Length: 105
Figure 1 (cartoon, rainbow, N blue to C red):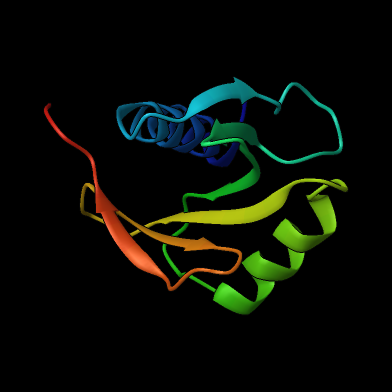
Figure 2 (cartoon, rainbow, N blue to C red):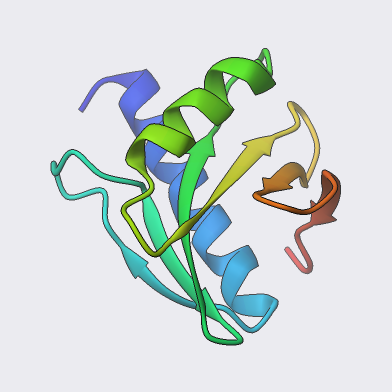
């Protein structure tokens, strides 16, 4: 596995744990399929989550990918790791962008 792929995988794992800490039920979808990274369920809403663990956050590019990967009946979500922090920029369809911070560790 390449370094960037390992970094991406670590980001997906951290994002999944962060979602679960916020009472989302999650399924890892990144096993080589052309789909979102994580399918997250909360309050009857299914979220197609794109996870980005990059130095530079490009919201327009990330939203475009999230929209393309969200299947019918799911809303899109982008979780972009803020470099050198334990925080994430989170954009969810129909909601204002916000910052979530990992707990612990």
